[in-house]
Length: 319
Ligand SMILES: [Zn+2]
Ligand SMILES: [Zn+2]
Image 1 (cartoon, rainbow, N blue to C red):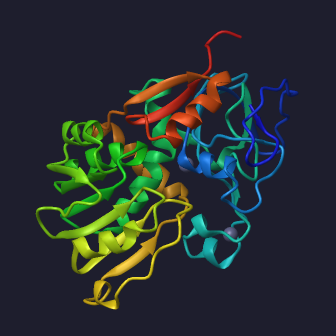
Image 2 (image 1 turned 90 degrees about the vertical axis):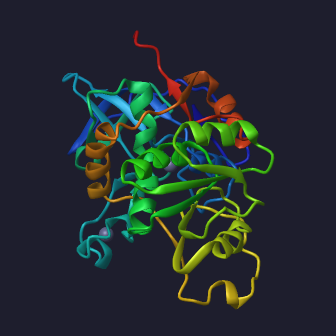
């Protein structure tokens, strides 16, 4: 499925089988989860994607000719030499290439990936269930680490990432307060089932002061809302790659050494740590499967907030 230009639906195309370069693997794609970032690319909210583009950066596939199963995440390549790479911040590499953005991704039957950025996947998980761990899980995990030892944690936006991270946070002994779109009682019930001790609308105040909050929803107006809910020295971590503008707010909300920060991309170390941790929790993902040809429907469901958990494109095992 190919994006020719932002603002247009993806189009089904027959493409030549991609040719792996030096150090790259050719994969037959089994599954590829859909991420809100894909939606931002389709909607033209991110700077220059490669065009035409095959989206998809949560790829589960088997190496052609070998049969071993691997995962391909958002971080597709780094230069290894810039100041960020040298400081163990390869997620911020000046020359980074991202899967399904600068490089063709996994909304396709075949994909190529640089082997150094691929992950071994925990065997306990079937293809569909492991796919959302590769971005929803990984970026959520990096965001969770940035809240440090916060015990009372707020999650704003209860989509694919939050439904994974609530389980990890509970496993670590944290208490989780989930915020959904106002009136989304199904989403609130879902959060409760997964371990949130309180769930309400983002227009509600949590029953206790939070130590930290993670904002997964791409909604800038949630930044002052979350700041109001966290205690002194607490942090608000914005986990999305794109957000609507943040409205001005009184300095008083930031006062008291509160911190607002973003989380960007992932490092390979995040991936290794998280994929080791997930089966121990054990994280269970809730997925809705779509056929490859239904990629536009999957994106539309995500846009309308109609999914519980993650959407995953499932390629038939035959062929
Ligand atoms: Zn993603
Ligand atoms: Zn670099």
